[in-house]
Image 1: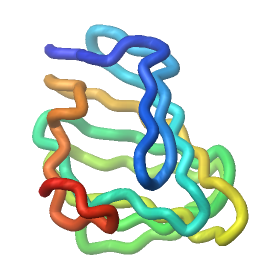
Image 2 (image 1 turned 90 degrees about the horizontal axis):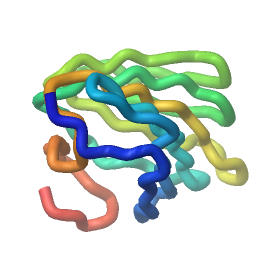
Image 3 (image 1 turned 180 degrees about the vertical axis):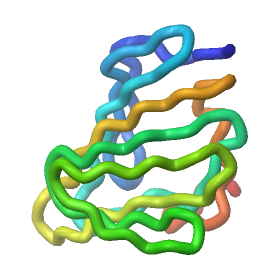
Length: 122
């Protein structure tokens, strides 16, 4: 198991921010804030699954071939190797969700992008 996250790690992305709330040998917990109308890349992870819990705002989630709409207190499970993305559907409020990662490799190198609105490398 490889976990390269540490509590307090954070980053700013074109769509918003993320911060590691806690991390251990087998997990990572992040707080993710998505700016109004922003969208993350369509991506998958080969070595980790993710659990998302919406804590504020409204989201459109692409999960495989399905499109889901989620609100406060809703959750989504993303298995390994499943294409996914999330969009903040509000034009004025941030979307905040908690992401719990589990798997054999937990780091930013396990992102395979298929589409990206911000021109990042695929």
